[in-house]
Image (tube, rainbow, N blue to C red; front, side, top):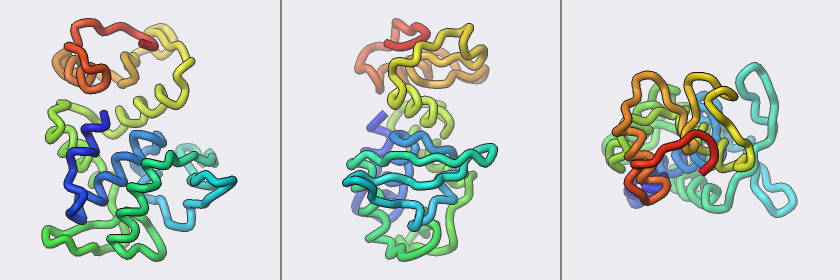
Length: 189
């Protein structure tokens, strides 16, 4: 899954923004709306660790989300290059590399994930799949089966919806595990 964000050009503004956004989605499991609403003031250092503090999520639930160091580095690269001093972190970048506007939309995040997945050769992947992947990495001891989660089922940390084909699952498996994807089973690997 790291191919999803590592293939982006870190020397271009769009690449910096997209690397920061995708690493945040992958590592922290944020929803699209949580990512686009994220403000600079939401990032705090506590006890030598960075976190998103008092993040208001779906249903008004408030939580604190730890930020891994490699994600913090991607965020810092984007924030510094874009000159973000206040307000929303993720903003539009035009084709000339100029940062503009008050923030991205959830639809823009959808397109960024789709385009990045296509570049990485992953196939049909949605932003929520990155959240599922993050949940499985953050909570690896959580044993899920088809009966536990119903349909969609979680296979190797990726949510599978009705419109996904086996070939897309195999490509996701290959990216995550370096194998052929011939063996897919429910639950933890």
